[in-house]
Image 1 (cartoon, one colour):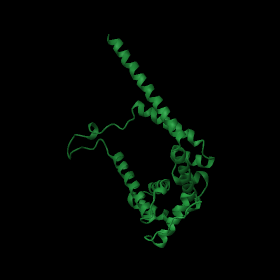
Image 2 (tube, rainbow, N blue to C red; image 1 turned 180 degrees about the vertical axis):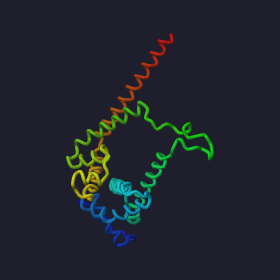
Image 3 (cartoon, helix red, strand yellow; image 1 turned 45 degrees about the horizontal axis):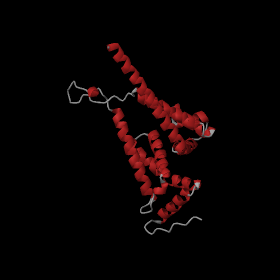
Image 4 (spheres, helix red, strand yellow; image 1 turned 90 degrees about the horizontal axis):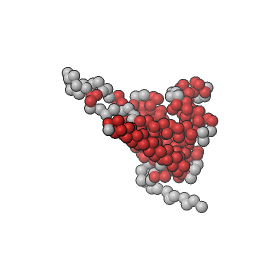
Length: 234
């Protein structure tokens, strides 16, 4: 029998209601997740939009914020409002997004100094994947494709359209002839299911075995090249 958590005295009435929904969500009540999301989705979205000035990025960041919050919901303690905890997660995730985007936008041809012919090209590490990284990435993509078969047709299609065909939310809505809100809700649920599957011991073990196998194959190939070079030099 579940023990009811004691009421907290440092929360407002709304904060206490949120906490009650948090407890229900932790117990597996899907409606509780929906209530929490409906309460704060617009606020999170508008905050993300102010930070990134791009509606599609703001949509993605909003979904990511709820995904991260719901994944570690059990760690929330009612020392402060759930909304405060949620907004902190959203802001930190958005800051990470902005930082990564700035790095990608940095041009290697821009001069290091004003009126200088020097550029960044000799000072920035190449972002191209080496053979080992490429093979590991292929293994991860293969794992993702394999895991997608565990999703229902509805959710699998959402993931494929968004992340493999790289369609926008609006494009997916038009392609499937469904409301934009439905696209966002289904994508959120699909990512949540996918995340849980990828965290399972079986998926992690599969990835580790195949990555290690790939690394051994690359190492063996390198050794073969070294031996060949030595043989030619002797």
